[in-house]
Length: 79
Image 1 (tube, one colour):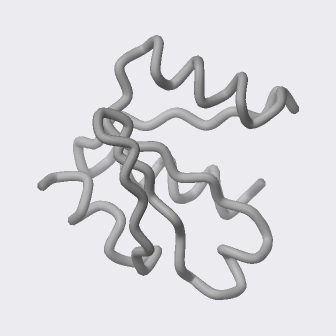
Image 2 (image 1 turned 135 degrees about the vertical axis):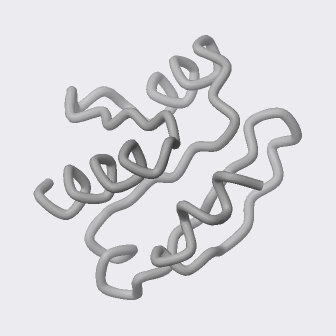
Image 3 (image 1 turned 180 degrees about the vertical axis):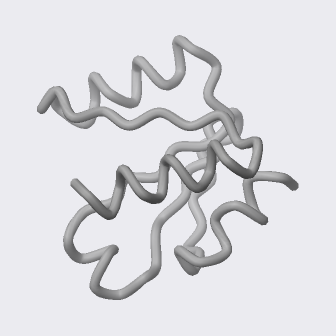
């Protein structure tokens, strides 16, 4: 959780609108919420992603997913 809080904080500091869901709801419900609020991207970050420092980023409009280094997340979000 702490790593995700830090990541969310850093993204916000760089002008990226970011939310974090800790409610424990199922992934499908979280994705529906992201779609409802017109999120451009969704990244699900768990233990494996933190270990590998690589995330899967989903572009909500097209449904396309891409792997990206966690350190480049802010730069990608500004594209």
